[in-house]
Image (cartoon, rainbow, N blue to C red; front, side, top):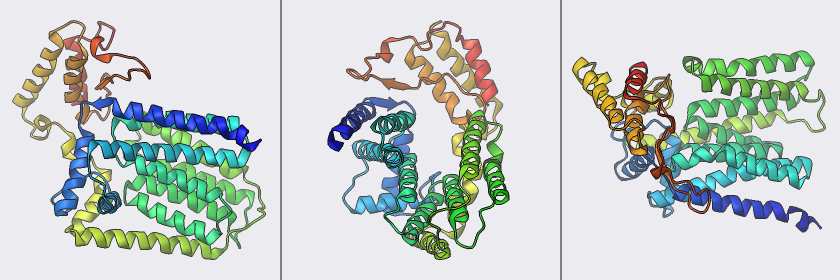
Length: 390
């Protein structure tokens, strides 16, 4: 009876895996973030010197993790990047479904969450090998582990502390949010701490302010404000809705277990990266200082050199690419967007920069279409958009 109940969910998981593989292997982005990450991983494994000889926007744990995979036999190719991304994608969706299955025992709700999380993470097809894949998988595993009472509180706290340190050393903002959530869980469940309504409201207020503190430099961006709204409302509602008494409390020793595990991961990662040829100053820049600044590598050369002649030439080339046809083709828009995207911190250009042909899955032939379909995108508007971005 139980097998019959959950069989449709298993079949849905297989179907989603097939769809995910189809999307990953039939999508090619015109900008080469995938190649940049793969090249940096391969170069680091060959010569070391992260942030010194190998440029990267990501933290050192991402390179330690992929080095371990490389030692185990993984080669840094487009195929292996897609296989890993598919695995991370399915783990993130699967852990979300497992949490709902444990809480509700409903196959319908589990299938809805499985497909919902899978669809929510579909942008993974754009940048295989990006650290967003393991980040999503780690967050999903931590959420599942926090709910699974088959493990002791000390064991769960240790793994959560280790995962938090790994995320801090991959993309520091994600690690801060994960540790804040885990810390709130501990404070609301720990022995010797009275979980009064005032205390819960204070903690909810702190969680509401957290996105503003972490991402204050980007708060003018719309996506940041939306993320902050979703995060704070979910955190505040969860904290306030928790009961004042728990059947099982978390011992104080769990906090120390988590802290020690986090310090162990941090120490091992720092020692490995330092041994591979990275200085203390470069490590500080790569983990803490760099993520808070816009790297000049993201800005076109004509802007970093502040040369008016080069800027005018770049704008002219951008406009000419739109003059060839009143309805630009996909290739032409790709050329236009390829120039605009690197510094698009405030103004988003037309978002169609990939060549996709999903064949039996979606049957959309983008190459033969005129993108965008409206004839309103003229060379003049392209130039104006580019000027606003610059």
